[in-house]
Image 1 (spheres, rainbow, N blue to C red):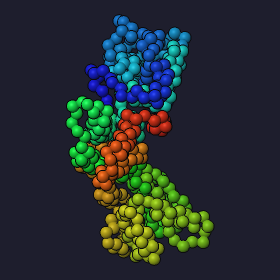
Image 2: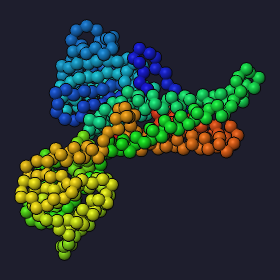
Image 3: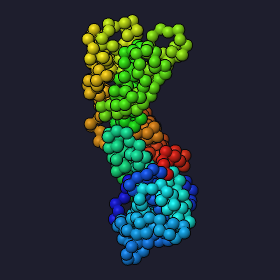
Image 4: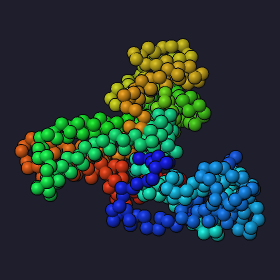
Length: 473
C-alpha cells in the first residue's frame, strides 16, 4: 500500500530474492517521461542516490540556493545547461527527498518546453553528469522494491496509462490507491493469526498460551473463502473492462455491415460500395460503445460463392462469429428475410450474446424482425439505441467498488490458488486430518496471497509486470 508522506516507509521485503532484485538499485537513472512528441511541456525524471548532485550540475535556479538545498515539491525556475555548459532551456525543476517520493529515493523532475530535441539534449547532459538511461518501468519497479507500493498498485500504473474507458480508468485509480491490498490484507492477517497461534503453542509449550483448537477457526476460514470467491468473480468483468469484448459484425452481402462499422467509429474505416463481396477479409477496430470497449470485426458478407478469395473471407467471417463474445447481426430492413439471412440469424442466436440490427431504416421497410433494433448507418439514426443495447449486455457491477475488480490473469491466478488452498484446508478439517496438515494448506494460501501483492517476491513475476511499462514510468 502507498505510505503516508509523513510516515517512515517500512518494507516487509527482506528475503534473499529481493536482495538479488535490488542489486544496483541505488545508481541514478533518468528518462524522458512524456514521450518523443512535440508538446507544450516535456518532463525528464531522475531517481537515485546522486539525483541532487547531478541536478545541481545541469540546472541553476534564477535566484537563491541550489536545488539540492531547496524544499521538496516546490517548482523552481532556472537554467538547464547542455553538455557544453550552454543554456539549453529556461524551465522548472522540483525535487523530492527519499523515502517520501514516488520511488522511495531522492527524485527530481525537469519540466521543459516540449521539444523532442531539447529533451534529448537535456537527457544527454544528465548522462554526462552521472546518470544512466532508465529501463522500461524502472521508476515504478523501484517504488515497489522500496516498499512504496505493492504489485497490484504497480500494475495499476500501466493500467491507468493504457485505460481506454472511464470504467477502466476508475478501477485502475482505485487499485493504485491500494483497494486490492486493503481487501486481501484482512484475509492475509487472519490466516497469519491462525498459523502464529498454532506455532506459538507448539514451540512454547510451557508458556501460558491459550490452547490451539482448529475448530475455533472454521468461521475464519469460511469467511476468507467467501471473500476470495467474491473477489475472483470480478475477474471476468475485469477482462472485459481492460481487454474489451470481441464483437463480430455479421450478415449477408450488401446489408450495410461496413457502413455500420463506420457509423460506430465515426469515420470511414471500411470501404463501402454497392458491389456485393467488397469486404473480403475481417476489418478490426476498437471502439467504446455504450461505455464498453468493443474489439469490432467487420466480416465478409455470407453467401454461396465460387470465388476462392471471397469464399475464404466467408469462412473467416464464420470463424470470427464463432469466436466472438458478442455478435451484431445485420439485416436489410428494406428487403424480406432470405435464406442467407436465416443462416446469419441462427449463428447470432448461438453466440454468447447477440444484437439484431435492421439497417437501412431510412428506406421503405419490408422486414419486421422480432427483437431487432432499427438503424440507419447512412444517417446515424438508431446508433444511440445500439449503444444502449451494448451497455445493457455488459453492465458494470455497482456492488463492486472501483479498484476491487481483478484485471490481470496473474491476479486472478493468485486469488484462485489461495481459494483452492483454503477450500482444501476446510475439507481436511472436515475429514479430521491433524492440524499440522490443515495448516500446510493455510500456509499455501498465504503464499499465493503474498504473490498477489508482492509480500512473496518472484523475479519472473516482477519481470513480467514491468515488461509492459514504457520508459520513464
